[in-house]
Length: 421
Ligand SMILES: [Zn+2]
Picture: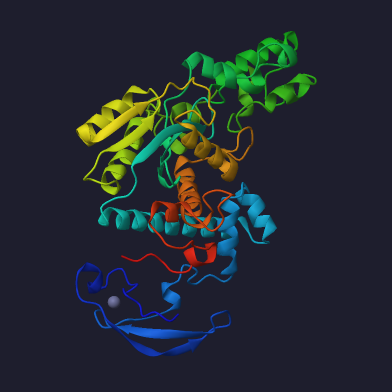
């Protein structure tokens, strides 16, 4: 590394809170991987040492080459597990790299946006739209992904993931998940899936009814359950393990730990319903517009194109006032290139094409929307700074078209140095 460090990598260094920073060279050390000779430094503000390697994104990675491969996999519709298989590493290794990638890419883009704001803002016309996906359950946990771009360059300003309220009526959602009562399960005893194991007396009565007169005529005692033919051992499998043999003999069941409360005498299970899932759509869109307010030119009006959702008009009026011209397009209009929202629709299609989590009708959907947001941060960096704006104009990235950079970044250069304040 030829450039002198401009910041101390230690987060508690006084130079990170305003003290002047300088460093002096402090020898070299050799490593097995490239680069082999690494320059050491000593910070004048805190007196501690660091090296060129400390400042790199692949700091302390045993296989630093994996970082770039995982970065490209994350924007190439490859799932995490398949990525680990392809590169012959464990799933936990891939997960650690994913964490490092998403944090670095988020910091990188935030720094670029701060740089844009410091320059007075860029862009004239912007487009925003939301797409829907889900975490775990399409009906119970839908997720909204608002994306904000600049029109002329396609530069992605912001993309987030927020919760949405559950879909449909509660009864309809339950109907989708509960097993059918008739048909294939009609011949099976409903004991298999329908009885709470805590309700031992209910289980006992049901077993009695199904066992018929044989159970009623069974002799009292511990061996009673063994004399009832084939149904009793089958029924025993359905009883909780802490239920004693006397419960099979028609005697009242002894109070179990579950009946007395929670396991091991703990508090009874809470009957409080889980917190209702509320929509974060408005909050996420508001954050996107607030970012736009900071990073768009403040000395001239801007244009924002959206669909007809009322929330957008309200937020734009409150955040921008008269400075923003809001152009609305009905969402049922044909989505061709003449549609004013064509570019944002095309960008959303690109996310579906690049992010494994957003591919429809696959099992790669995100389990946590926070991970989806990190995945989007990686895609934003690839889309804005690495990938060409179009296939017909190679070498020109959206960041270059917007006027933010003069040359494209490669994945390798983008992942070289940590983003330090
Ligand atoms: Zn320092």
